[in-house]
Length: 151
Length: 108
Image (cartoon, rainbow over all chains, first blue to last red; front, side, top):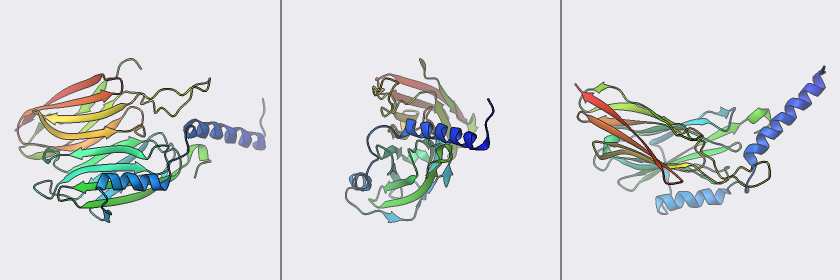
């Protein structure tokens, strides 16, 4: 079979669409209020400040199935200057929760890396809860281009 | 996948009080409960929902996991090593089974 350029484009386009449909099934993506509520539940109603926490994620993720993320919190990890836990949320996924990291004094530094799934282009949010009760947040927008028709 | 095989990387030695980086990976399909099979039935959720790391019985790091974590969950984190001892890693599956691994570290 010989393909001209136009047919080839249509074929790759539909392949990309099938790939997207595979990820996109299920209930509608979590609404922003839901994410907001999850943050409030985690912080106990406290509005998070910016700073201290830094979330590293790729600007553009080619494959939404494995997106590497790293979260790091500035802290001495002793006494009151200690990170208790870090909540990771993705506001465009069917369920906004991604993971909760719990640190201890034996952690040394409050840093962790993992790989997550992203259904579409959206913001990834990291919220850190400190031992003294303060709360910090960082947010990164990740563009997801599965097969080039996302985002 | 019938068996979930954990793989863990811990340095063999460290100096007292040093913070080392630990990398863990376990093979697991992490079925999210969102996908459907070819007949349109939802494939039931089956993920690893909790991961913990202990050093000589003391908690070091733990993680509550939701379906948004990728298949073959990978975690990289740090641990402070006050003395020679053993790291114990535990993964808890939705079906109740647990997978464990242990790694020794020596303080020089």
